[in-house]
Structures are given as structure tokens and as C-alpha cells.
Length: 193
Image (tube, rainbow, N blue to C red):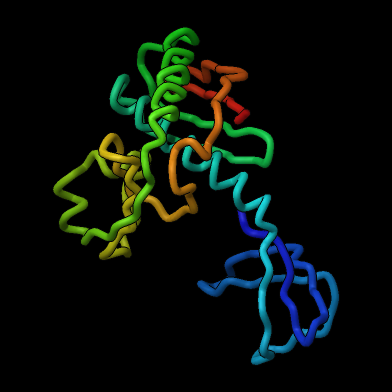
């Protein structure tokens, strides 16, 4: 999800209503005319919205780490909203009880309040550690350097998203629903408390 907020020019606020990427360029659409290319502006993000997404994103990393370590499951899709998250993953032996145990284990790890850190790695280094790429689709082919997100010493993944600084900021993860989507295709819904 994109940030929302305001672009401010000479004290006048223009609400950002849409952000998209077109031909490789990022475009911010605002609620009214009045901005021109080259204008001197400042920006103000909706911090509450961003922080909520940061909490959910870091929670998804923590859960995906356990899914990968315990069940060798790779993430096949996800969706983060302001009030819930959905994770799709490949998993042979499906059971809601097993997924619930991973959520409980995630909550125990959150209590350890591990730090979140960022580092950079070359493509060659990442390829030497295939567990860094947890998405079923693999690594983007055009990048030669990758951003790595670490959760303490328990998880390290390729990622480009925003994260909290430590696990306690996530709060508690509550599993709300699981779905068996067919052969090895699973779905997990959760909220943060």
C-alpha cells in the first residue's frame, strides 16, 4: 500500500489521493489543481496509516519466517490492509492447529522485542543464501543489489518495504481465519491487537 498525506506548496495543502508507477516513474495524484513540475514543496505523510502498515508488514515477515523454518512454506501472495492481513503460501501438510501454533510462537518471539535492522547485499551474496528469498516467484532479475531486513538473529529476508524498529511495536497477532485453497495452496488471515 502507498503512503497517503499532503503535498504542501506555499502553505496550501494538496491531499494525495493516488500514487502509481507509470513507465518507471512514480506519480502522485492530488485532490485539486495547482501544482506544477519544479514547484518547491514539502510533504506530510499520514503517519498513523504508515505505522499500521509497518506493524503488519513486520508481522508478516515474522510469520513467514516460521512458516519457512517449520514447514518449508514459501509465500505466494499477501495483502495488507489497515485492519487485517492475508498471507498465501505453499504448504503440504495443512492444519489450522499447526498454523495457530505458528501464530502463538510468533507472539512469544514478539515478547523478546528483537531489533529490526536493514543491510545491503550484492546479488551474488544473496544467491549464495537462497533462504533469503522467500517469495515463490524468486528474485527480481534486473537488480544487482538487494535490501535485506533482519529480525534479530532469527530472520533475514530480501525486502523493500517499511518496518518497525523492534518486534514489541507489532503488538499481538491474532489469527482470524485459515483457508485450504487446494493442493499445497493455503491462506491465513490475521489482525494485530
